[in-house]
Image (tube, rainbow, N blue to C red; front, side, top):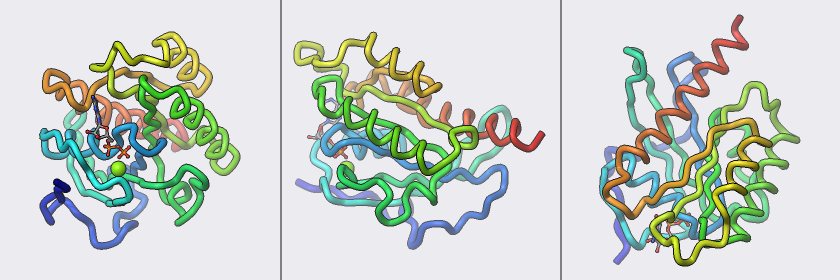
Length: 195
Ligand code: GDP
Ligand code: MG
């Protein structure tokens, strides 16, 4: 069964927050089926939704407090962007990018590299915050991407790297950490460039 999120999480329109320090425009990118929606929904609701509509694209609103500072986030959970991440202006809209692959799917890892390269060609990496996520680490027997490869890619991208599972209930705090650390990363980048 396909489940939709409660309406209160949804935003009617993207781009409603201004470019102030505490507004964060986050984009979740990656191949289809890697768990972008599962991670986003896990973060927002703490629930795991097993079958989320693969072509559904949504923007959600969420607040978080980091170091006593409140941030209002807009999270864009993308869909079907394999061929062109620039479609619909996602990349020009976003400031913080979560790159997701599945540790069970080598091609999804290669796709992250491609998306990163494309993004870098469009945006200055100095003002873009990124974070790399290898999802589905509960499926260790099906692993196709060694942890070390993720580490190396993250080093190349100059960002943090996590292996997680959206499915594993024990990792709910870790999933929250992903989103919050990306916000923190963006805040630090903005502070650096403001200096
Ligand atoms: P998206 O296309 O990137 O948004 O991927 P979805 O969030 O729709 O997930 C695709 C499929 O992978 C669904 O069947 C999910 O139940 C499953 N899935 C997502 N995250 C995990 C995970 O961490 N572990 C496992 N075992 N399955 C997952
Ligand atoms: Mg999805």
